[in-house]
Length: 59
Image (cartoon, rainbow, N blue to C red; front, side, top):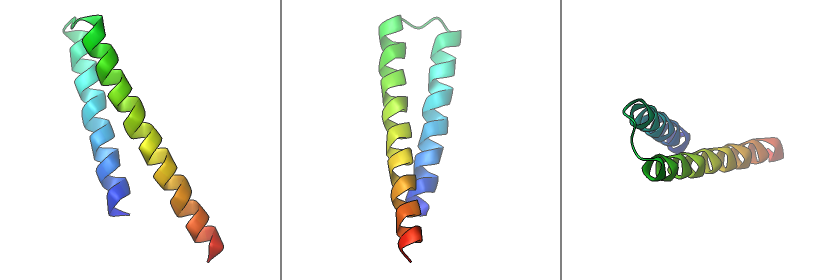
């Protein structure tokens, strides 16, 4: 459960970083890289969440 909470916190931090970059008119390439990082974190979170659900259903 701890890892899910850490991932969620990282997602929120990177989302805020992306929002700030967009508001400040940061170059598109940099925003794209931040967006890719956010996508990876979300994918990791979803995968871990799915694995935990499957484990719970096996019990």
